[in-house]
Image (cartoon, rainbow, N blue to C red; front, side, top):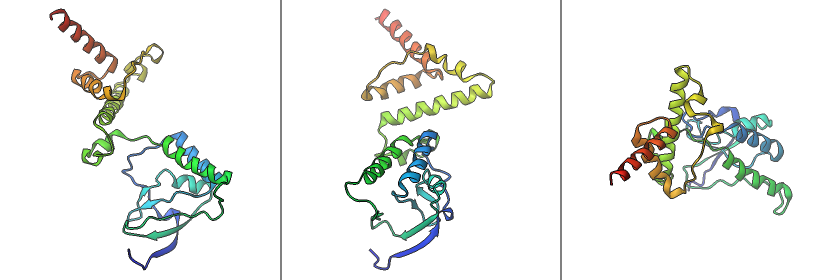
Length: 211
């Protein structure tokens, strides 16, 4: 590790959000992040590349700015050192410390909403991060999103595209069964998943009747 560590003060507005960020976030998560900055002030560090484009913290920058936090202490590394943000105002067993720890974990959990299109554009990036059945779920989500887009463009309502939600029946599957289910759905070539399930049932019954 280089002993000559480069540290300087900058403005948060010097950094740019990643236009290819796969996590779209969501309204609830963004509000939780903003509320945490307002209540707990800064905790987790942001991460940027050498062009000042954010790698991590794309959902946090707006919350920090909304809370009036504009100053940045930038530390340059080559990835060979972990940066610790030490909050000297927080005692080990204080409620404030525990609240910040919980907010940090919970906001990360709630604010995840991956864009299937961006993730599936380069499958090699998913290796070791998504299982095959989880990739099948992403494929299904992408197909449904495209179906809704097509139906909307054709002047049809989302309800007509997906069916009346009040009349929907949702099957329960275990994690290790999802991959098979999604492959069968896609094999039908149908965009309406309910109709695809019915088609699978019809084929199965037909095979059994002739078996």
